[in-house]
Length: 337
Image (cartoon, rainbow, N blue to C red; front, side):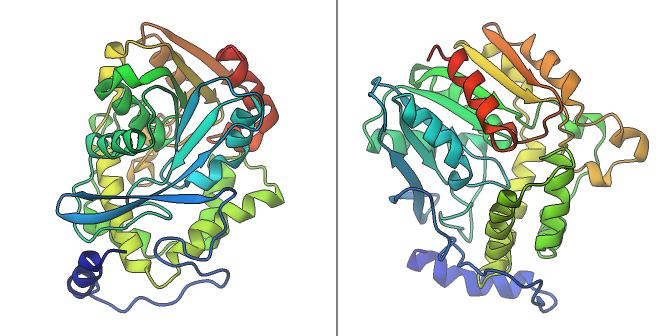
């Protein structure tokens, strides 16, 4: 973390921590930028200044292992994911000849958790575009999962000349929760909620939402990744940034701009997904209507002029992790590989 950020955090912690934060469940403990967690490929660091903060954006830049095809894939992770969770997708793209760039967005995982940052999808898209410029990438297949799907949409709208093909994997934000009546949760409320996260709560949520109530031992690594980050010495700054990011997700829908997308766009949907931000605060009747991906995917693709929909029956929020062989075969076939 930059010295600027380190100086600011004691003041922020005093302001936010009305009660002592108790230690939570046992397991791996990682630093505020995931220090101690092993990434599947070497991690680079893009250092830049934004909103008065000195920031460090971690990323993996992985060369093709098969015959190079001259193309680059940019992978944008979701809210409860990191660049590392793209491991199987990186390998699939590499084998097909792609160079792959998988960043951790600011506020996430191995990147800086700033003390003061106005999170917008425009800002994150601009940060990502600056990273690509630094790496000499002018054109890419952009793949966004979950919250990364919202970011990928914003990136494609802001930098259409950079996007060869847009791929959204179970993107959230295919419905406007605020407009539908999901109650507002303040940043302070999100912060209090995030401080209570445990490995058990992460696993329970992921099992029901990401994997359609099925569980494989390999999923535990990703639970430990998040839980270790949240139980570590940077717990408060991690929770604070997470709260700001949730506010961004809730208040900045992108679905109204789907008709403005000009590039070929692929929607890949696990149709058993039920993800809906803030649904835990919604009434029972409203909650029953939210996160219906069997309907949301079909509705969304009709709004996109060059849209194509691929559905994975019975898979949840993370089909690329739940059934990687099936998912990656469909993805590469759709891209013409």
